[in-house]
Length: 151
Image 1 (cartoon, rainbow, N blue to C red):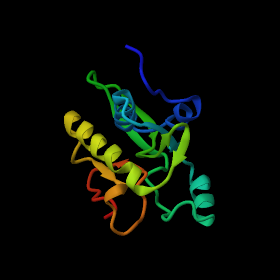
Image 2: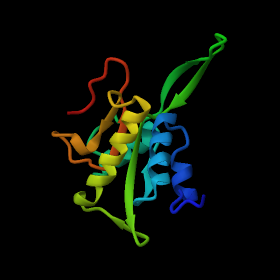
Image 3: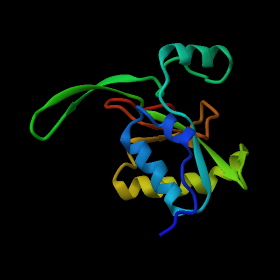
């Protein structure tokens, strides 16, 4: 089966260090072939986040895009520290052009929410689309334990 859309090299590189569930979510959506999307941001260093905040490209200092140290434990009990980001930002494309109008993302987010539910992640994914305190419809993040996320 030939895929209608696939991530380009830039989007793939921006997913490096991102929670695997977000990669699966975005890749599964793209495989549906409904609309083309890309990844505009994934993991960030504290310095990159400070620069984005200073230049108005971010609205928070403690971003989910920041790389966090997490412990991975295998079934065999092997433990390994990994650095992982809990957020991605997406962009929708129409005829190869980036579209930033919020209405264009409504069905993208609806479909992604269905995918999250299919995988059993409906309660751990935070949707920028639903934020009331921030205008960030392109943001998708994984909630951490004890984290209610932005409302």
